[in-house]
Structure formats: C-alpha cells, structure tokens
Image (cartoon, rainbow, N blue to C red; front, side):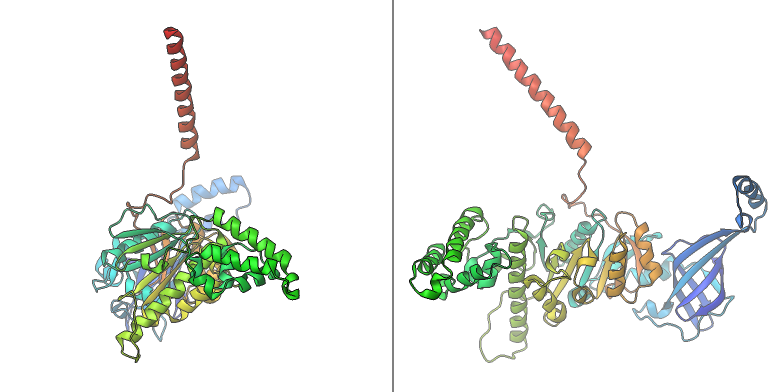
Length: 510
C-alpha cells in the first residue's frame, strides 16, 4: 500500500518523506528503487497545518479550525526515515546500505507481514521470541541468544519500566535450552522466580579464600584506616587461612601484635586493639554471611540451571567482594575448560563447567561505577574483554547508565533500552551505542512499561518492541501503598473486635 513519497535532499542513510497519514515512530516502511527494495525506520514524525500557521489568538485559532475542516489539503504529514539496508539482504542477516540514495519522488510503501517476519522472526536455531513489534503486534520479534553470550548484553531503564521482567524472560529462554545462568540478585527480585531448573543460593563469603584487602572490605574496615589495614595484613597469615579454627587463629595473631614488646609493633598497638573489636563484632554481626567452614562457594552453582545468587543480605562492600570472587573464579574455570578442550596444556586441568555461562549483574552502577575502582569492576571489565573467547557472556542491568563505567558499557554488543528520562543517562547511552541515531534515543522518554528499543548484534535491526510479560515472575512489581494501608487498617479493626469479644466473654464467665 502506498504511503507517500521521498522529498527534498536524500542521503544513503536518511530521507525525508511526505505521507498520506501520520507515520508512527518505530514503524517500518519500504522504498522501492531500481536497485531493489530498501527498508527504512521512521525515526521522527511531524504533522503541520497551513490553517494554523501564524495564528496569534484564540479567535483566530477557532476560525482556523473551520478552514482546516473545509480544506482537505490542509494537513501535511512529514516523516524522517533512517535507511536500514536492502530488504533482501536484511532477510539474510546482512545490512547493506545503498551506494546511491533513493531519488526524490521514490514511493514509500507499507511492508507486508511476510517481509517483516523474514527479518524479525528468524527460524534459525538460537533465535528465541522476546516480544512483538511495538507498531505491529502481529510480528513476533526474536533475538539471537548466541550473540549475547559471545558479545554481551546491556539492559538499561528507569525503575519500574520492566528491566527485571526482561531479565527473567532472557533467563527463562536460556533455561528452556538447559543453559547455565548466574544472576547476582542485589534486591532479592529473583528468588521467587517460578521457572523450572532454578537454583537459589543465599550467598555467603568464605573469609579464608580472600586476600587481606578483600577481608578488610568484608569486615568493613573504613577507607583510609591504613594502619588498621596494615595490622590485618600482618595477622592474616597462611596459617590463619589453613587453620581449622579460623577466627580463633586470626584473633591469636592479632593478640600477638597487641602484646608484643617490639618497638615497631608497639606503635600500632592502638590500631591492633581496634582490629580485635572489629573481628569480634564481625563474628556477631555477620555470622550468617561469613562462614569459614562453607568450603568453595562456586560448588553451589549448578550447571544447566538458573542460579540466583541472593546477595541482598550483604552490605555494599561485602557484595562487591562476593561478586568479584565469583567472577574471578568463573572466568578462571572457563579458561581452564577452554585450554583442556583444545589440549593446550601438558598438565591435567580440572574444571567445573562444560558449557557456556551467562552472568547477569543487577544494579551494575553499584559494582561497575565510573568514578572509582572496585574489585568487582576489575573482573567485570576483564570478562567484558575476554569472556567471549571462553564462552562466558555478561549481562549488566542498571537504572543509572550515567553512573556505569563507560569502558565496560561500550563493550556490550547488544542493548535493550527502556524508558530513560535523564539527559545524562541518554548521553551515556549514545556514547556507548554510537550507531544509534539521536532521533531514536530521543524516543526513550515516550516509551511505556515493557517497551524497549533493541539494538546491536542480538537483533537483525534496531527495533521498537513490546516485551512479553513473564507470568512466573512474582517479585519486582510496584507495591500498592494504598492497598497495604487499607488492609493494615482492616486487620487492626479485626484485632480490636477480637479483643473486645474476649473481654466480654471473660466478664460473662466471671
């Protein structure tokens, strides 16, 4: 069906069109040229009226309405269209931009359902359904799971716009293939995810597996307390790590510093006293978190399952240490597996996981901040650079893209971007996704819950999509304060009535 014509100056990547109706941002169109059909995406849509040009007051506006209704040619519909490539090539997963731009006067057509399905609903193995085109609900949108494992994925949106639902959907689809997923769950959003083959782990830290700096963070020794940290490094010996009585042995080593008559050790005695208090307090406060007898935390992760590591009970510093430890060990394991599989080592190598792993880090701005270094950030960046070689994919999720390290963010080969209002966030996204047009980025403020712009290698084309809802996800939705208050008030009334009834009964018995 004819929609309009190319007008004005056209470019190989961009054209302007006058159309017979207003086109929606995110709608796909066809331009039929001598070299073949070209697919375009509406990135900006405008409606103007000659009757309302230069209107200066209310009376003129009311008169202009009558004029506009009489003149059928009054309305002008203009669309800015980004050129995506030749349709035939796009259906094969290839994006080839025309060398010669569409000639002004080229007809704008509406694509058929079959033409769009050939691009967005691939039947190839590894492609799974994620939702439907936002402007054409009849077209299923599929994404390539291989690409997010090999090239990583960023999911960015404001709070409440559907990030955790999308994480659950991606996880569910990988789970259907019996793949291995690890979610670092910072707000306890996924422990109630009701999908098959889920393995929920309340994350704990084995202090004997840490180095002195990591133990300092876990014990929450304040930043800048250099002498206290020095005392801990001196006390945290190999014998302490290997002792059956970990805490007792650590306390003994600190006691040695406290009671020493050595002149240099006497100078740090006050800090050693403070370390004694910190160790004693940690055993009391963190007894459910720090467990020197738990063995290797990695052993609790199950291959072929969705592993939810609940780190919600850890402080920010403790969570940072835990995430770094897991990432370091998982990357090492995938490297060892790759070396063993290719027979590149003369020694016998043992490893835990035989197949690729997809790791998802929620609240990425906490663990991968742009303004300072953390141990989790170091290992995340290393996986972002090297993970694809060893079958280790990375997903980072954040509602504050502006606070996420750009070096890591720009390593994400694919993105799902939902509603974003802050201009700083939009600029960070534009910097990380250089191929995304400004017009498309500007649409982020108008998206609704569950709507997303998909870009990158996991999709054949940039697309506006409404993501399927995961019914098995229980947590994460907004809670109704009004309902909670009302129910609480009702329960209070019931309690009062019940108490009054018991009092009256007691009086009758008396």
